[in-house]
Image 1: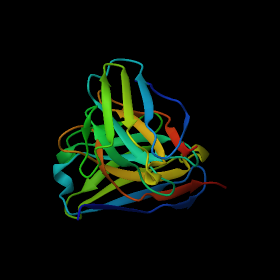
Image 2: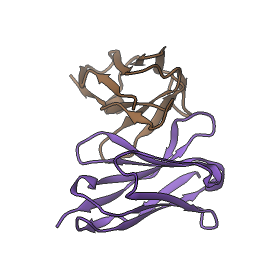
Image 3: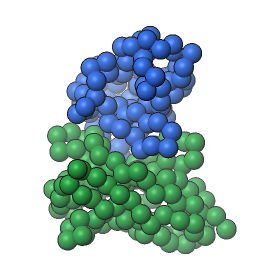
Length: 107
Length: 119
């Protein structure tokens, strides 16, 4: 099983600042990585797939990068609606696995 | 509008069984791979099971293999998760999610249904 490790567990950021979230895979997953945003009481929402492609309706302020085992989600300027938990997911190999999440909170 | 609506959750005793349903609308279930994902209270996401388009392929997590069975009814455009031998640790919100047609990401999610396993 491919283990996905996210860091940090919690990120405190002021509105308008940039946030950088990391995700590391225990084995190479090529470009088979997605990022999701989840707010309390809601299901996850797909943000990014194939490392860097924004899903439909996702603003340009969200960007993804990386390859192999190291990946990054960047939120260029945090808005109030961006404070949430973010998960990475690999779909390179079964079982699909998720990271444990990074909570982005207001500083 | 593309939508997934789960139902069937509830309170069940350890060792019991439950069947979850996921009704799809706005697209044909038979043309997409579908998944079940769960989230225990205060925890992260755990992928459980995948059913390929046309029910061609099934993959399951070790944690539920042999206890949970994924299936679909194309006539009802619905996905199911038959759960048996339930344990306390199966308590979670259960989501169905669509495998996108262009990658392995999960592009459409239902609102979830809550399963509580407790005596």
